[in-house]
Image (cartoon, rainbow over the protein chains, first blue to last red):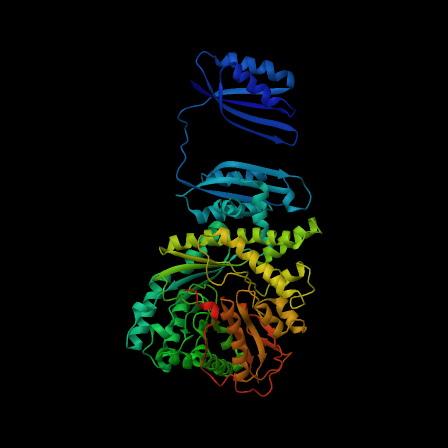
Length: 183
Length: 457
């Protein structure tokens, strides 16, 4: 068995997951993880599956294209490496929330700071709807921050960057949200 | 994965609804500091407080930053000094108060509580010395707080102690008359005092408590008010049963914050975690008021008919939500209605819409009592003792903590303003009705026997 990651992109419509999972089932590929989201009108899906030896990767890709291209969807398959180049250091989970008017370079500006301090984004939701309501222009990053970095310097750099971008930003340990909302 | 709604609701509570941890209070037992010599005792006390709480403020501030939750106050509570220093006379007790004040300043905490005594059934030598020392001790210190337990459901009411406290409060007011009697803002007279209160001025560390412990007081009247406002806006016909559910859920969230922050602080300081005190503790800031909750729930103001029922609902819902949220709940746990510390309550008192008598009635269903009530400076010790005795009776009969923190403001009359500063706020002096020539009820003294509900064995 080999692990593969399949990504599917395109205009959202009913039947996308059914089409992908149908092909995988017929090819004897077992789905291990799925994540999908919809950004405005666009479907984005990622499927992590195990592929039996008898099912060739090219064969599977062809079958997926046959099923998905008529629906206007693109598909990509990549083998999952057993040992990636990056191994996660000891980290603590934080949530960064920014609010402020939309402009070019907000995601890039914040993520540059995260990358510089080796913070790894585990989940990101950014919504920019325009207008003055701060809740309509929000970025929420769930980030693993390495324990070993200078937390004070990271916090200062993040706040400085947020200020430059005209954003208000908060950085809080994830546990506070878990404690308040999860029983 | 956290939802966007969950994250934004926490931020809203923090940014516009005053969600915070009101106090992290480290309790430190001073029994092992005992010594016949006051210099040795105060030396031991200072050393022990600095050893355990030297980095309390820094640790709490670090945790506040990490979780993005303000920890407004960092405080110390100690063993009742009347017990730990029972060999000292009144002059020496003042020295102890100075040492506590010095230690508090050295480590940067704003209050240190426990300059107190437990006299519900009678006095020891140390109790008498401590009470005698109170006016001077509170005049020469800034951060020392004092609590005297004069009654309990099991013991009844020590009326000699009640009268003595009436006279002591008068003396403390006189001794701090240049500051509107602010000394009295740091004296709580209690019935059924809990051993683990983290809130001032009543905080002390009970004799059955660990050597060192961290107790947490949460707050959150602003969060509760906004939750009620939102619920009523989205559903104008929401009834009181549903509203109490809203309060309960909100209290759960607020308490969870206290539980997390308290445990983190205890771990970082290497001491056991004690309790979360679930109180709704207001500040003079607009939007951080218990009084405003009364208006959100549909009364014209706190003090209007219906206020006692509303407070009963509020207090009960806060407890129900909080108890589910924390493994260890203690302290006072309920809604505070401190007149001067809550600008909305202070305003109702100023306009005469909240009277002392109505306030007293409300204390039968809330967690504290007559709290931060400024009264005319010419109120006699006997009348003050009478007010205290009434408050003690409410606590004793209902098997609950009650307290009186009364400030007879020297040289000022009903309707004038008293200014205490900072968290203690300012208050319009409330009239005390029927305060004419006292009879001899108070001066008869003795102990009012324990009520029938105390016989539970």
